[in-house]
Amino acid sequence: MPNWNHYVQRILELMKRYPGLIALFGFCSGVASFILVDRQQGMARWIAVILLVSWVWLMLENTFTQLFTRVFKREIPPPLLRYATQMIHQESLFFVLPFFFITTTWNSGQLVFTGLLGATALVTITDPLYYKWLAPKRWLYLALHTLALFAALLTALPIILNLTTSQSYKLALGTAVLLSIPSLAVSLPLKTLRGWLILPMIVLALGGTGWWLRSWVPPATLWMTEVAVTPQLQDRTPGESIKHISVNELRARGLYAYTSINAPRGLNERIYHVWQLNGQEVDRIALDIKGGRKEGYRAWTHKQNFPPNPVGRWQVRVLTEDGQMIGVLRFRVTDADQSSSASSQAN
Image (cartoon, rainbow, N blue to C red; front, side, top):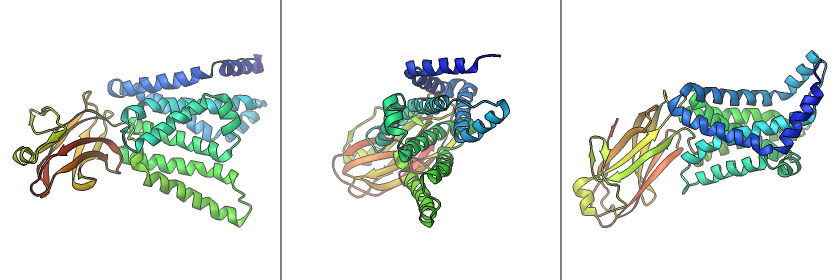
């Protein structure tokens, strides 16, 4: 009969001695999955499936441990459960970080979300912070738990199910909020009427905040491989990208906003080029893209008519259907002239 306690103790000692190895494994598997999204889609899906299965185990941890005790007449050591939870947090956060780092528009509010993910990942590999500062604070531990699950779902769902970014965001947000309810119920005194009233308010607040701040969350599996703001486009190839253009040149030639967007194979996604002048929307043009092309799916909008006074700072925001920002193109018009409209083409 094998000495299970001995093996468990050895595993715990190794995890204590080398906590960074779990995080390193998570990060490497994330990088591998990120690369395999375009090359061997099946392998990327298996990595994502394993990650989500580990989360199912984590959510049903108490049920599984009780079942294990009944079947094998032996309890799982509490330290092993604690380290297993920490390992899943580490694996999840370091798995998603490569996706979010490459898709973040760093000069936008997305910096906050990705920075928070990075800071949270560092907390999970720093035992004094994780066990002495974070774990005793139930609400903070719940927040980390929900954030890690939300980020993991955003990354895994488009790979596994070929869901659009919009569908993935709604499903990830709904799942994360629903699965946070049992933990919230434990934290609140539900024996009182006040507790029962506070619970749905917190749940609605979590869901509403997640939806309201969706533009701050990078679309984990969509990123731009090539961009250009240019007066000319030939054979689906953009000319030199410009940062400044005069009103006369703008009126004479119009302007192309060119984006090449990488998406997982099999994914069909609708995006928008939103033309803005000094922060005000001028045009919103829909484009349908398809995933799987190594160089990214080429799509562009061609604007030929402009407002009476087009002078100022222009942006072309590339957005998903739900308003998540894939990226932004910027240029400046330096004089004055005429009205607004646009035509679009896509490959």
